[in-house]
Length: 273
Image (tube, rainbow, N blue to C red):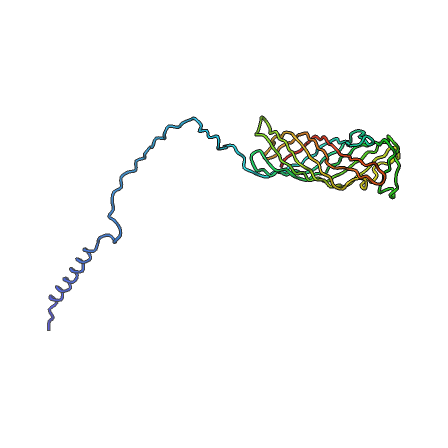
């Protein structure tokens, strides 16, 4: 029997036609995308700057050049001369003695030109005394022998102290090539060593620590200039004066009762770092 393919062919063509029609109806862009638009070309916009006022706005309550608080250290070596002064005519000063002050200083700034000053110093100083009457003297390295010093014969003291200065440092703004400063404060001291020279008895460098008080206190005044070098380093020069407030010597045995104090004049050479 001969089969008729025409109805089947028409059915297949109809299905293909419907399928293609549905595909054509769904050819729009994916949801969420706006249709493509032609962007306008970019044109640079120049906004003119407002006229500048060259005059500086001045406010006396605002410091534009203020230095933030900081800490610095310095090292110094101070040649000095020292001498004694007494409250008695029977014991009096007989000249100056050279020495030195070596140490490290510490400054904690609480303002552009103000700081707390401290540090640690080794002070080698002394003085010369003569007595109107016969005096007796004790030295440790002479087996506690009581030495007799005749009237008018000098005794030279060489004393070493460990000192911790406590003061206030004031300094100017930079003037020319440097800054001027002054430092005022107190210096607690502890005795490290004491030596005595008695030329009339051929004694040189005798241990006189038991003739000296262990503790003392002084005040200092120093003024000078800091000359800036590379970085934060500065060269320091200055002059200083120091006076001890309490008796340096002990009144042992039959020694006359008096108060011997010391004064120093120093020249500072140092550097900050």
